[in-house]
Image (cartoon, rainbow, N blue to C red; front, side, top):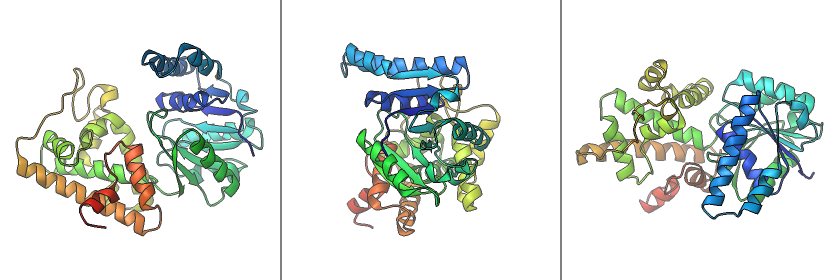
Length: 350
């Protein structure tokens, strides 16, 4: 089994980034979106990213021209017919993914592998609308895909082992660290990350601390690049709520029921940075605030960090993922300075 031509469906920020990963690595890539406008937006995102690499001296113009030449842009699923691997990167809506995979199953050659970039939905359920369930896997990249080095490869109970091996090998061949996982809600990263964000919003809802104090606690004490509420705004409150709903529906744990403060903001149309307003306003550049209450800062840090580390231990103890995969997921996928087990080792815990 040799993958020589790759397709990407859905040309938002993530899809365009995934297409860039493969085009930079020498693969011919077909990018497909649902409309001419969506195709042009994807093409513009792709070109802008490549141009930035030229401007920063990472590649020369001739290399950029070669990368651009490897791309074919289309609105027609039929143009994916000879792709060996097609990766879907559409929004996290099961009905939409079902529509796309029905089309892919019809148009992509029988030997083609179909992958979904879903961050939380059931790969098993997505594969169910196809006649090639053994050739469907999850292949979850992190944003921005050309930069972030972590990929979760998810196998369903019906996925062919050779197909999973090939997808994992491909990801490793383009410089990604691969965690091979079973199909479970949120996989590694979103399971741990969204529990942490939701917990932080709950502390805000309960009046334990103000938003600035919660975020400052994790930036200062945990040395995270941003606080949990700032991160929720960056991810998008709509995305956070949808992922939490998916995990909550599957697991039943109330810890994953979207916190009221996040749901209320979303009901008002506030989605975070993408809409200009979330937990913070973004009409001007957001400047992180510092905490003026060290004792409260220490309390918030302890509460959030203890719960996060407990979740990581539970994931390891369940056998779902190794300490190494969990640590690499949180560092390479989220940009955290340390993985949870590295933190525990430093603190003499396990």
